[in-house]
Length: 411
Image (cartoon, rainbow, N blue to C red):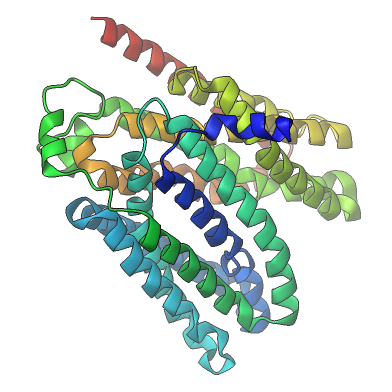
């Protein structure tokens, strides 16, 4: 018990609202039943071709982007909690008709609507976390929410696999129930966190990184060029990271034949276990580092982990490389959000949390087709050193960006 207490000591002293968000995140993530199994549902239960299923999933992504931008504006104008409750209730309601077989192919419209309302919610949720923290405790706070997501998701996937095979309708109804329970917890126990007009006005002239900005979102973004550069560079990390779900399973099959899929499954289990067990100690180790330096380290771990995967068909090597890039994932997850939150103007938090993930997510989105085309011409093994080089260049660039920021702050 003493060891467990020491493990969680780093999370002591946070606001009660953050602990509520932690439990709400576990519940919400535990109920993420639908989208991990959506491709199987569309192709198996609705008899869609892979091409049509892929096109529909692309449409979901296209709906999410504009919804997120609208949600950012609404959250900064009308409040975080009010928008979250309104949008999440509507998102959950959209899942209920999906559980009835009579809905048939019309399920697509309900899923599109659900993703739209979820897109409205995410900037408000991220802005609320920033509102509830300070630069001194953001790293443990963000780490706690990250841990909650992974704890819930790990349990949820076990339930979802059972439901998909035996009680498909409850994939949708269970997802809806989880949303309703989580948002009820937030609605009842978390107060509105949107900065007041007085707090925003008070920040002017302070010279702080989160000093408010009087202009619109474009002007505010241009006033933070380093944040834009940082986001684009971490987008290169996303370009590399995307391949753990795209060509890594293909590589294990090429290396190990029929047992490749089983080995890939164990790699993902190793990844999930490391994220749950090591998130807290890694955050503790890096909490006194500058966030941008920790993010630079994560890129170096990506370069080593992904860069050496294709070296030779060794089971030991592929487990070691998975462990290395998973460490990079954990370091990135517990530091990237801190850097962004610290550099975001208090007046535009939700709008920044809407725009920057879209900008940074471009790399993740375009990676599969680009790398797929490359491997068609040059083979799977040739892609890994290229991916490692991309991560290394991004890592060094982020480190240099941090050096330049430090020099500017000393002037």
